[in-house]
Length: 327
Picture 1 (cartoon, rainbow, N blue to C red):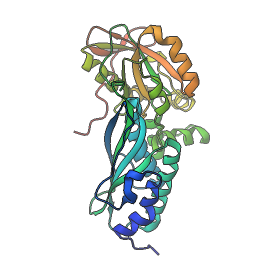
Picture 2 (cartoon, rainbow, N blue to C red; picture 1 turned 180 degrees about the vertical axis):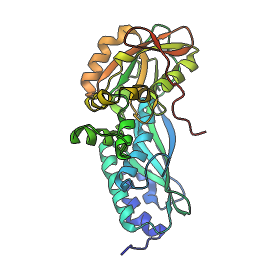
Picture 3 (cartoon, rainbow, N blue to C red; picture 1 turned 135 degrees about the horizontal axis):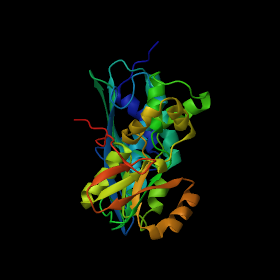
Picture 4 (cartoon, rainbow, N blue to C red; picture 1 turned 90 degrees about the horizontal axis):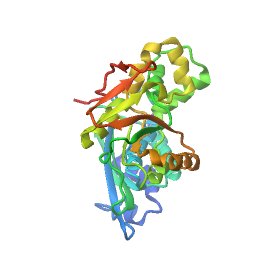
């Protein structure tokens, strides 16, 4: 039997505990929150919204919705080298949503807060006749003047990416029942990469003073490299044979090789792609070891604008570079 809910009851039971330990949240009982920043630091602010039917499926568990919503915002902080501090949550839920949904949703937020050392400091909860929607505004701090940005790439820089590329798309396809021929363990790993992306917070912080330009892979690898290049009025050569792929992705491509271009243009991987001088290779190897995050060189920044994809044989390959776009 569904349990009825009300706004203040929800806040008190499920969300106020997520603010415990952050004095400036004022127990989620005031009109706003107080954010303090250490001397010599500045605040980094980011906001992302996710909508049912666009960013996640109606059948996704509340735990997965919570994890995805928070982590895509933390990924933006990671791309700027920031240390997470807190976040605001605006949650619009369809009328009739059961109390158990909020219980599971908030329990996952609590788990992620412990993992990423971040606290809920405020927000709003409303009912909507439309689809489930959540918008999170995340705050981080970083030494003044040290933030990583998308701008700053230089000709001759090498291009690197963390982790593996394309797993999120394959995970979504598996969830939709559009793929087969992968082992149960590989399928589970690919699905998890879509449902619960891993923000590369430690890596982002380690790249301060090393990387020239950084972006997280949300729109697609080729598109996001293009964003970096556009800001610097430069271009890139991307070596398709160097792009890191998981064992699960390689298993899928063994049966459906035509999917490779999709893996390079699809988003939602939330890995970090960045440029750095070749002199940083040894440093990056150490950073990769220290953070436990694989870092792979995949290309080079060039003077001629545009992203050129180089195939296995050394020839240019035409691929869709627009990435995901809402409008």
